[in-house]
Image 1 (spheres, rainbow, N blue to C red):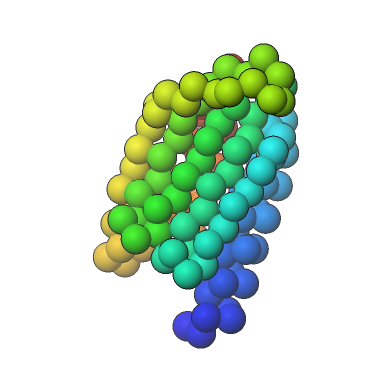
Image 2: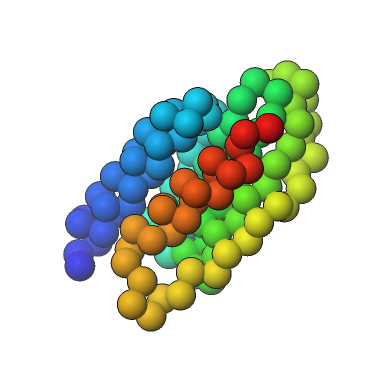
Length: 111
């Protein structure tokens, strides 16, 4: 797959993840995507006083979820990792980590 198609698929996957989070009443507060770092990305999401940090390490093929309390937008967050999943590259679709991210975000975003 070309860089153009692969990067477009990643951005579409992030948009789909944001839509799935919204459907679960979880707001997206920030997204960072770096195609040149193996497609790694970070999403900060959650509800007003409960945050989720979803991080995809494209090189290690690891998805991690951390949570933090947030008293306001400027407060420093103390993240606690609550889940980590290694996504097998053998036979895995390029969207598999987005599916896992949705499941973990809904599971840990309900607080």
